[in-house]
Length: 376
Image (tube, rainbow, N blue to C red; front, side, top):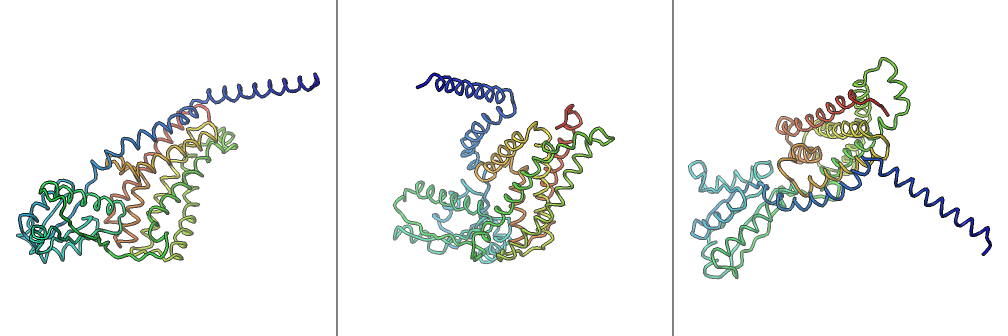
């Protein structure tokens, strides 16, 4: 190997080492990037790890029980269920309804948000369990709210297991097949998952695009040499992207219509819910963009915020945090209006939470921007 080749290789190795030192030095000096780089995996793991207990501890499932048997076994089953879910039986309201009337009331109430399921204990439940070692139940679960339905099935099953353990009838068989009501026949995945899919897509796209709105606006620094107020920048950015969101939502609703997604409520109500969802994504994105010094930082903040929000919404489900998560509020509001046919007045709490989220992000943005010395 010639001396020139050796020198060339040494020079190349030196340049590469120099570039590595430069890149590491730049990265370590970027405190926000380093914070996000190490915090994301830590927070994700800790959040999921802590969320398993919180998710089961704070789940509140309301179940109605119609007991046609009225035996020692049926009464003990109701008490076992009470340890895991909030139970209202026909014996609790016998001064208001007969068992048959309470059953009719349960059928009317299930499609609403008041209960997650109702259970019918048929006549002969205790006799069949004692004589034959097997019996049956009727379990009817709300099919609209997927998370509530899943929680109801799991907690009802847990109550049945506890009943068998406490009555020393572990080998006894209690047959039941949860019947989902109302019966929604979905011909495609979008019909079944529209509340989650549309909420996530609209929020994520609005949030991601808005994260580049300030940090990537090069002419903005020159504009600030004019009498322009910095708060006007926040207002203009939010309004501009909200106008774009209108067309995005119209297209999305058109696609939902094309795929025959059921919308039983008013179309304008669904539009307003989705627009508020986009507004929370926009206001949070503009805030990320204002705080960031580079486009990379803004993108990292979007990734960090969105992943944390998604994990808490789908897995952790802490009742102390859920009210302030736009994805949760949008999914529930969309389901209640589109699939249950509710009005905006009936879901006003969800609407107010979305407005509050947007207002919080908007206010923090203005306060930070007024105190920020350097801009973009």
